[in-house]
Image (tube, rainbow, N blue to C red):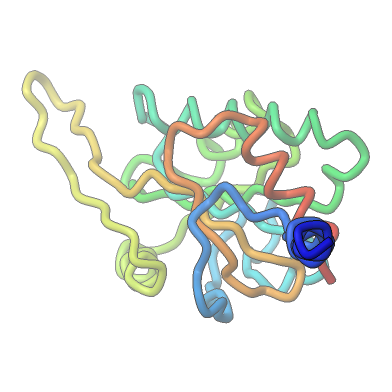
Length: 190
């Protein structure tokens, strides 16, 4: 009888365990740093614009050979898998290479992945200040041949909830299903 009582006592604990995010969670969660950029859609780009929606914040550059296109393709796939819920998710792509990434180039680049993605750029010092607030690293790599330099940069995706709170950071290499999992949890939370 005692054994049965112990089993019953343990059931509510396991049944009530909340699903957890696959991304690294910020504890405690904090307000995401605001920013003001030129948007690839022709409008001012800032977090306040997306209040009530989830934001997936990505830092990269349009000449990136592997990480950026892989990340953007994954996020496009995740949005497709979300179906109608994708309307509540906004991907924001901020350049780390303002020297080459102007608004038309960013717009063209992002449209190839998903026409709803919005990119941003600004003067180098403003972008550097934004990266610092988000803990993003970006540095130019000298070219080995010719003029084509590269960029080393942080590769995670920042997950910002509907209230503008920085909730989690998904490291590079996660599949679309991991983003879908986390986005559904964040969409369900109020």
